[in-house]
Amino acid sequence: MRTIGLTSAMIAAGINYVHSVLGDLDETLTSSGEERLGALVELANLSSIIGNFFRTGIARASQGKFEANGPHKYPDIIARDSSCLDVEIKVALEDNKPKGHLVKPGPHIIVRYVLCADDGIFARGKQNRGSLVRVWEVRVGMLENGHFNESNTPGDSGKTAVINAEGMEALTPVFMDRDRCPWSPRGPRYKQAFQC
Image 1 (cartoon, rainbow, N blue to C red):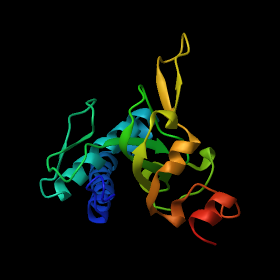
Image 2 (cartoon, rainbow, N blue to C red):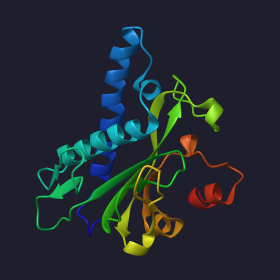
Image 3 (cartoon, rainbow, N blue to C red):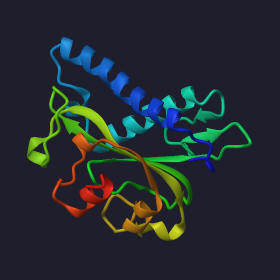
Image 4 (cartoon, rainbow, N blue to C red):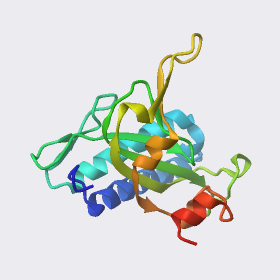
């Protein structure tokens, strides 16, 4: 994080901003008889919304070191201080690997989230998904060209560049929520991540 210019306070601010703004939106929606935003929009769009709020939270907490770029613009966070680097943000649901349309090597923040019940409790399995967004993991680091798997399947949604397992391992976990982790507590990934 130091190489990029990020701090733990900026990461925390990004997470808190996501939860706060979505909480306000959800309150407005539910008080009008609607469902939470997490139940109203497609998951790909929800991931984009989370990424937009996360970058805004970081920029606000950066004391002018970073600026949030506009939607659908590269990079997501622009460095405004010589000690910082531009950063790309990728967001994915549960333990999915984040993807974009193009390979973009360089500094990355990966945000993964889950959909909890209204009380904030997360239950594993697609059939148990709620609609309350909670970030469960943030990873930070540098990605290289080889950390992406590219595809361009005819008739599919076009070019995609998925961050592969090696790329995910190259990134350092800087935040993990044990109670909302989608991995099985009996599995090796969980035990390794939480040292149990």
